[in-house]
Structures are given as C-alpha cells and as structure tokens.
Image 1: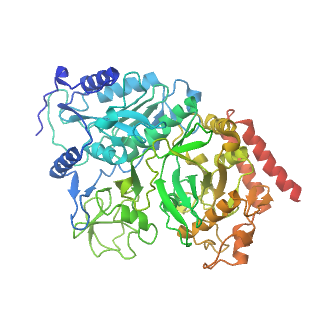
Image 2: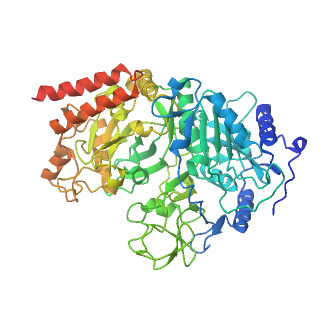
Image 3: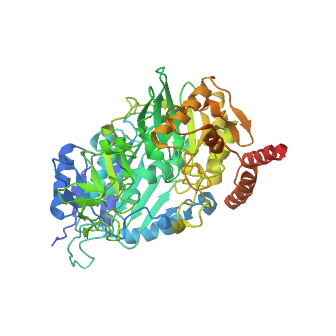
Length: 613
C-alpha cells in the first residue's frame, strides 16, 4: 500500500529562473497534494530509472532486448485508448470565438470545476515537473512550456516527443513567454480521509476533460493518461494553443507533414502537406521514391510551425522531437522507413506481444503469428474474432532514429517552404494533382478539404467528411477566423508565398479499383509539381485549378496507360456542381465569420463550369 505524506511546500525545489514557473509549481502542489515533487532533467539516467520503476509496477513490459533493444510495451485501460473529442474544450472568453467546430465552456466555470477535480488528485503520487521546448532550442520559431503531471508514462513520452528537461528550462527566462500544461490521471492513491488503495497498471478516471484557455496560453487535462489527451505538447499545445498564438502573433501552426525532396539534378525543395486521417500522410512523410534519382528526406510527420523570415519567405520547423505514430497498418510493404525507425528505443502502446517478447499488429506482416497476447493482455490466435492490436495502437520514438531524417530537421530557424500540399481521400472528382490559381484559391482548396467515408460503419460511402486544412479537431479558435488568418498570411507573403497544390492518391474506377498505384509512386506527382515550378511544363486551366497534361506525368515503369490517366484527371462537371452546392451549405454552417473571399472563390469555380456549357 502507498502511504500519503504530502510534500512540504517549503521543501519544493525552485529550479526556474522564472519566478512565475516556481510559483505555479508550488500552487499546483498545494492543490493536488502529491507525496513528492520532481523536476525532470531529461537525462538518459532519469529515463532509465523511471522506465525500470514502471516495469516493476507492471505499467510497462520490457521487450526482448535482442529483438527490440531498449523498448517497452504499455497497455492502457480499455476506456482510455484515444483522443476524446467530446470532452475536449476551447475555453475562450467569448463563446463566439471558439466557433462551431469546437466545444466551448466558460473559462471561469471550467476552472472552478477543474479545481474541484484536481484537489488532492495526486495524493500518494509523485508530481513531475517537465519543462519542454517545441522546436530546436533557441530557435526563432520555437516555443516553450512546462507540463506538470502525475503520470510517469507521460514523462517518458514527453522525453521522446519534445526536447524536455533542464536544457529547455534554461530558455524559460524571466518575462519570457511559456505555456502552462497541467495534467493528472485523476487516480489518487489516498482519499481525503486518508484511506489508501492499491495502484493499477494504467490509472485513469471515467471523468475526462481536455481543456484549453487560448487567451491565457494554458492547458488543463484531467482523467486520461493517453496520447494527445496527456502529452500536452502535442495536439493541445502544438496545434490548439499554438494556432491561437500564431493568429495573434503573425505566424502559422499547422497539422502538416514537412519533407525535403531532391530531384535527379540535386536541387532540393521543401514541401509541407495537410492530410486528414487515412490519406497517406505518414507514407508521404517517410516515402522511399520508386523513381530513380529522387530522394525524400523527413523533417516532420504531423505538425509544422511556419513564420516569415527576414527575406520575406515562409520558414518552417517541426516543433516535435519524435513520432507518435499509428502502428496498425504500418509494415515493410507500406512504410519500411517507419519500420526501420522503431527497431529500438521505442515505447509501444496497445499493440500485441509475441511469444518471443516482441510486438505485432495488424498490417505489420502478411501473416499473423499463431499465438499472441493481445493489447488487453489476453491470449489471441488468428480467426478469434477480435483484433490483436487496438486500431489506435501507437509507437513513440525520437525522430533522429528515422533513416530518412533530413540534415536540416533541427535547423534552428527552420527551412524555407516551396510548396504546400492539401490531400484528401476522394474516389471521384478530385484529380491526382493540380495547382491552385492563386493563394486565395489555395485557401479555398484548404477550406474545402475532406475525405469520403470509406466504410459503412462511418456512414454512407461517398459522403464527404469535412476536415478543413486537416485542422477541424485542432484549430484553437473560430474556423472562419482561422481561414481569414491564412488569407492574411498570403497578403503578407505576397509573391514569396509557397505554391499551393492539391493531391489525391485515391481516385477509383467504376468497379472500385484504385486508378493510381500510390505509396512510393506518388513521387511522380511531386515530379510534375517541381517541373511546373521550374517552368519545364505548362498546365491546363480548368474551373477547379491548373492540371497537368497527361503526357507530362511520368508513368514509365508502371501500369498506368493513357486511358487511365484521363480517368485520374477527369473533372466531371455534374459531380463538381453537386459538390459546390454541398460546399456552400458547409460554408453557411460555419457562420458569418467565413471570409467573403471563400464565397468569391466558390462563385468563380461555379462560373468556370457554367462557361463550359
């Protein structure tokens, strides 16, 4: 049993040069009443010590060191397996500022409820103080935060996902900007009367809140120990809070990959890309091109921050230090780079355990092992009727282990962006690749981004699931204002703005078969993009954008003939006219903050099709 001896407030270390940080740590300790307060230094020794303690507690399973060196498996509670969007709130001062795509709570009311939940929430536990940097230490685009948590799983994961510890703390100087990030699993080991209870392998609470206070630059999360609910540097800070900061300060925080592509002539281009779920984002971020002479290097797979540089161009960083990737569906046939990245020094969550002490999940190999221990700790055999790994099972690993990592991935002030991609999963209407007619038109493409439903469980096949700029769950303020911020940034960048393109790897034939091979062959679409930027090809104007001539798409060595290319690049007027009606309804649902430019772009596309009649 764990006894409760609350930390003596006067004994709490005061390790920050910023007295506001020290005062906040003391205030949280007074509220949550932990046994101990530990400032995390980010060292390997600290990581190893905490990991050993977690193995002894049953929270982590150490994997076979010969098969998966220095790697661990965690199994969460079955009620705590993913982001909880219904319990995620934007607590802006005004209801209207959260917008229709966010859940809103009054900040004063929310704080009062949270204070009640956090009172004594860390009794019997250690309170960890985790200073962290989002971005390379000292960089112009980098931001800093402090996460307080009672979860050692969070401490280890933050060490892999951010630049955490003493070095980051040095940059949180007096009067400098930093983000408060408070987290508790909500499972105290001692109640208010002093009654004790045993700990569990994955503590959490049925009551969950993931709350964001954009004006105060603050995050408070309660009840979940999992992923984006608990690793508060990720979606909470890097997107929801950072997007509000970026709006106020004149930069961009985006749900995007970041890669560098080198052509056979040795010229390098930087490409960002916003891709909703299940649209090939990670595969593009870690692509191994199938065309000789091309190279793709990875800077980031999920989040990009961009700021105008002294030369007027847009410079980008990956603010994260690691990858928090979905394991199921990842294998050597689909993403060999990811598989090589996670060979060692990785934390796996909610995947299966093999009999020889390694991990497995659906899609990892063509054939499943004859016996596994599934993600809930039960015996599993093929055909038993349940998945071995949870569909949202994860791997957490530092980015520097990626074989395709770019030498520029830690460039302190970022790399200049040449191209922005928007990609969705569309079986009809949207061609393989095309360029926007202008920055404003590119913003229209981003605002109308979406994917068609792919399974009956999600709804009728073909119905669009909107995810503007791939930011629907992550914009920390009104979506209409977010679109207007993109327009404002375009005016600021002028002729130095990156070129905007839309891509779609998922066009299908009438029989449902894919028309394009995808994966490493997608470099062929990027090849056309770069040829267009270099003036080596001329596009074809259409109502929806600037399309390639079919003869300008390199199909050497793949089974894609001229007839197939025409299907891939078809722009059916009837299908688009229906889609434009749906788009207008969608804009209307966002409300009166939708910029007029979006309606103007919609009207221009309609007019373009009308002229074809």
